[in-house]
Amino acid sequence: MSSCRFLKETSPPPLPWGEGRGEGACPPPLPWGEGRGEGAYRAPHSGEATLTRPPRAGDLSPRERWLCARLRQRICHAPAQLALLAHLACAAAWAGEEPVALRVQHFTVPPATGPLMHVTVQNRRDAPYEGRISVRLPEGWRVEPAERPIALGPGETKDVAFTVAKGLNLDSNRYPVEAVATGSDGTVVSRKQEIACASAPFFQPKIDGRTGDWADAIPATFSAGGKRTTLSACWNRSDLCLLVEVEEEKHVAYRAGAEFDAVQVAIAPRSAPPAAKPDQKAGRHEFLLVGSASAWSRDKCFLLARADDALAATQEPRPLAPLELKAAKVSVRRKGRTTVYEAAIPLSAMPGIEPMEGRELCLSILVHDPDGTGLRDWGEPSGLWPWQRNRLAWSQWPGASWPKEPPFDSRIEWGVCSSKH
Image (cartoon, helix red, strand yellow):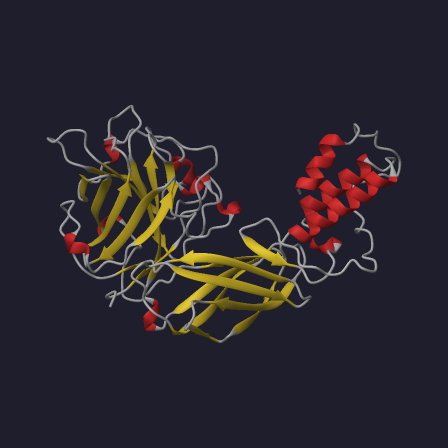
């Protein structure tokens, strides 16, 4: 679309709309002639699209067809060279828009146990899509079946499941994967990611800010602004426990009326729909973990949202003091250049969340570091699509510093297992 923007900025002012110049779809690009072969086109997206045929008008989204139509109307009386350039710009836009979007979900149990893995596929067109989905894993791994067929209606999203027939647990908990969609028309879309095993084993740590009793956890690490964040979770009969290790130059403790560092946590049933409308129920339980500014006061957990709260209420910053969840156990300590957040959140505060081996839930975090890296969002390394940013997915609160772009959606898969071994 950058070519179209260039033309819009450098072409003459728009001509008056005349008779017979409606908002019809942009005509198809000029025919591909001899010597204009079907070379691969690399789309400027996180996934790469290899097109094995010339672009067609049906490849363009409705908004892009409208933009191209406006472009053609602006230059309909311009020199032939400019008209040709407009055709080529539209062709590039058609080629650059991938027919499907792909996301490989995190493993929710250790991969050596032979779990299912899922690829989420979304049709980005206003026409049906048919094709085959396959997954490429590290050397020596094997999934079954090798590929699966898929059929999607316009705009439809589906999860495609594969069985990890042969895999290994990596100490780094970083697994390079590639999802590939081959359309029935020959288009090939691929996306490379690095996923983790996002799973909570069964054990009961002591909440004291020391990490020694978290040896049986499965930590997932990501980087933002050159600083690392490590997230671990576990469960027991009474609590869901979290350990979040935040590398930062300094920690700013909680003070009412000022900006401060915090970890925001969203937990929801796996089946909870994304937050879409203000009059919808939140569908999630949301907590804020903060360190105390005084050695004489305790570190705190605030209950920002319950699953049955209206989403509109979560978007209004409320005083935090009345929201304190005193039944939660929280410890926030500095360890070198790392702030260690540790919490045990009682299951009784989260109706509908019932951990059990093999059951999945949704869990995501935001790390608020206003004096350092800003907002760190687990949704980004989890491979969520750019259009999955969702301000309604997270509660507003006084003292938060939000970037211009909304955070990603908080519905990220997390498993529950008996052990990491």
